[in-house]
Length: 264
Image (cartoon, rainbow, N blue to C red; front, top):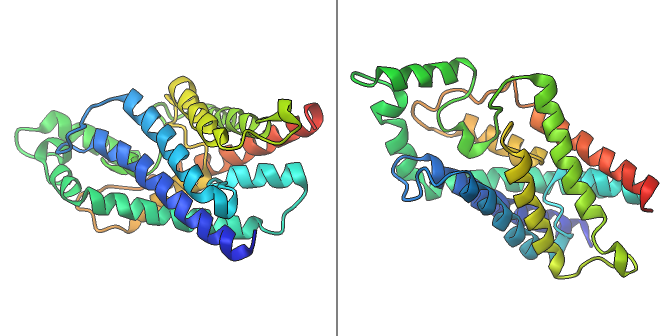
């Protein structure tokens, strides 16, 4: 694969991943959406299908890493680091493009949601306003969850551990695909299996932090949230932003280490 193929594939694939994954979060969150309050099952399966779609689109060009933790884990496994910066560049740029497209697709819903007194506060909505103020005091605006993740309980060690464990499971599943077939992988089934693993992680381990398990998935859209002209958007929670970046990178590295010791 050439550097240009890798960059183009990762940019397109990660943009699709975030467009569909962030899209389901917007659909469930925003008040004027038909899918409002569809719940955690919708989010988990929405992200799983987003992974599947993005993998099949980007696979022929770049191998569909779509995740810096995957890129680091594969580099540790194979000892090949030359294309890592190209993968990173495509992944982060794609994530920002995808987040911007979510804003475009839900533009009217964002405006309606963020100008609704029950969401941002106002006369007759004091209880909800208090919740909104409390969230903003913690650094997270009322629609930040459409773009990036945040913990239900702020406990740095636990939050970091949750992201490490979730990403460890994801990467171990990816690295061990097809080992019973002379190491040739699962072919076209690989994208589907990976998607189902993501659904499983979301349902089983996603509750505490929202399961970023991907630094680009979290940081790129968080930057977009900070830059977009959204009314009453609140903060981007930068004090937490390092956790869904560092945690997945550690989890991916640990999975690669275990793979090299136990499976290689």
